[in-house]
Length: 200
Image 1 (tube, one colour):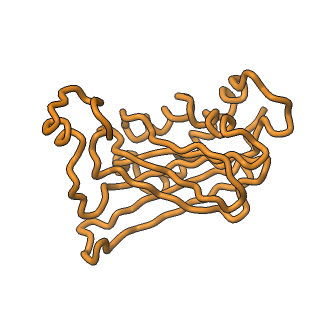
Image 2 (tube, helix red, strand yellow):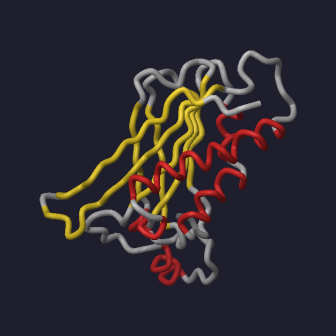
């Protein structure tokens, strides 16, 4: 089975003013998405999705990582990242999840940007033109709230019923004028010692 990519879409935004104040360093956020044929579309219920995951997730990850880095400039510039997948109406949410929730997809991105955090994500099902939403967090610090960001776009003709949109998001910085602190401050104030304790 080969990866069938109908189109690749890039969305780029650069925030220069936020809250009426100039941003010291413009915030660049990028979303790169591939519209791919759903390999399970039109087939009976598949109990085991592994063979398609093994074949399709690695080249899909390589394609999108290359596009993201092409827009951002280098892996070192990426500070926050995330991923998303949206199955078309005839697919399952599990089909969308299958292509992104594997280390064979995510590690291509982590390795390219020297990241250690897990990739925050959305996986949904939707019609053509539905929002493609990629939540992001700092690539090496899951508790750094300044980098809890979201980049989103729409693709007018995707996903088709038998397609999946798979996307990666990247940011070169945190939110402009971030000032809500981080999880660690809350943990100290609440007497929570271990990372990961309490709610985000």
